Amino acid sequence: MTTTNTPGSATPAPGSASAPPPHLAGNFAPVMEELTAYELPVTGAVPPELTGWYLRNGPNPRDAASAHWFFGDGMVHGVRLEGGRAVSYRNRWVRTVTFTDGIRVGDERGGLAAGVANTHVVRHAGRTFALVESSFPYEIDCRPGHELETVGPYDFGGRLTTAMTAHPKTCPTTGELHFFGYATGAAPYLTYHRADADGQLAVSRPIEVPAPTMMHDFHLTAEHVVFMDLPMVFDRRSAGMPFAWDPEYGARLGVLRRDDPHGQVRWFSIDPCYVFHSLNAHDDGQGHIVLHVSRYPTMEFKSPPTLWKWTIDLNSGKVAEEQLDDQAGEFPRIDDRMAGLDARFGHITRAGGPGSDPLPGALIRYDLHAGTSTRHEFGPGRVPDEASFAPADDRPDGPGWLLAYVYDAAKDTSDLVILDAEDISKDPVATVHLPRRVPHGFHGNWLPDPEPGA
Image (cartoon, rainbow, N blue to C red; front, side, top):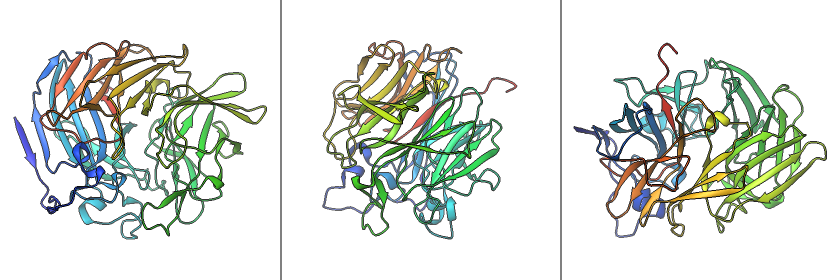
């Protein structure tokens, strides 16, 4: 059974003789209906251990028009898996005040609730959040009978007074949620936050930086938090994107000890570059912090990102920078139970962005200890989005599956593909056939149902 809903004020863009811009064409184009479908057909077998939601967020402008891929209204696409069945698919816009009332970012009427919540979906302390880095998180409801409905903006009981990054990190040891917020107007331009395992905001600490920069991600280790102050500087005078590449600003990494969250931030210079996404970071026990990133040489996107390793020497004050691969790849992920620890395996998606040269769709699995990689090729015209790890048991960095939406250009539809993480070169374990295409988006997670009594 399939049901659809089209919000009354969401209408397709008027017809035009000119071609749409790349971020509104092909599978970057938005879908204009909310849909629910049950008992999805499957090729292969869904692992019976998987019971929960696979959720992924992305931009989907309600009026089918936006100035840039980054700016579309958030839409969460979810597949419900239970006991070997693909129970349902549904997609829902996140009902932010921007979506419901047309209040844009920076409008005083909306404050930090004004945003598009289009970048990520995470869970902490029993709450599920849709995130974008310019505003408060928005809570969405994943309970039976309330699937993916918007609850509203969340400010940690009034304690959060900045925006929240779309890339918070959960410490697997303490259960704490580490994150930051940046500001583009007045200082402080950067604030570090920490919420405890129960969801109470316990630390909010301003960090002094020379100017407002687009800090999309950061790093967490067992002992440190590492910020990336890179030369993508906000410029409110810009007629287009509100930031510009400024190599004269420099590039540096800021290290803060977790056991002294209000203490000194040490800064370490690196070569100018840009990083949207970190893979992972860890302390090596010998005075070094090891970080893996998907690195762009500049933010002009003339060269694709590749996997790099940075090693911060806390004793010498220097950073060793090493390119690990020349294969293009973005959206790096690990088994999140290894966040901040010495993860052996990481995964990067190979696919082109809006207007870029097409790349053969693939998922690359790195053995960071052995320095090797394996690859899953999805085939002609099949383009994957980011893959999330779903564990098979309680062994971190152990067996599990990788879940990703994959667009099939020949059929103009999408599948949820499930791969065996231990050998991604093999055919998919299962391919869940969705009732419609899922536009290319950003980030998501496998969210297993809580254990009974948890």
